[in-house]
Amino acid sequence: MSPGGAGCSAGLLLTVGWLLLAGLQSACGKNVTAIQDPSLGHAEEESEADSENEARARAWRPTTKATISNSTIVKEVEFGMCTVTCGVGIREVILTNGCPGGESKCIVRVEECRGPVDCGWGKPISESLENVKLVCVHTSPENRFKYVWKLLRPDQQAIVLTNDTAVLEVHREIHPVAFECDTLDNNEIVASIKFTVYTTKELQMKRSRPPDTDAVLVFVLTIGVVLCIFVIFVLIFIIINWAAVKAFWGSKTSTTEYILS
Image (cartoon, rainbow, N blue to C red; front, top):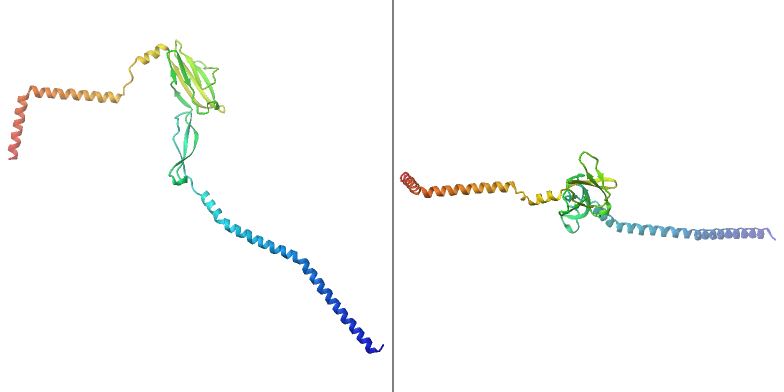
């Protein structure tokens, strides 16, 4: 082979080698691009999901603000009068601001209220000439409390009775007897009341007495009677001395006319 043919062969081989190298690089680039495409797709999906979530959050923001604004409404509460002046009772809790339907006031709930423990002396719920029924201070439910009945004795320690219910029925004796009932809630005395059970004779005497009359009514009636008596005496005096009264009245009238003329 001639030297010129050898040079052409070498140049041809070099050209073919460059072409093969370029083909391999392009093939590798395509593979890399093919491998990277799934990750890029996931990234685009994640960005779309984030944008959708953000849009949903923007759509829900007004509702959340409304909820917050409703929760920040200042609710004013006032309490009603307790049903008892001592012991355990109930009272109403009244809402004066934030009532439904635009009402000025509405009852929210009913809760327990307590007054002073000492309720003083009470009256029987029923009595006859033989028996008396006494009741402790309590609220519903009755079985929630514990009741301790005592027989009081002067200058001596009280006797605890076996009855542990809210109602005690006793028979009248020949001497007046005093009882006391303590109402306990969780072993704490919340009310204490005393009763006096009179004898049959004392009860009959009390019933035979006239009822107590109001002092103001007595005073008014007395003043009315005195005024009526005074008016009657004045009328009698005028009738008896009618001539003198007529002359006096006539002289007074003529004097008045003379002054006016």
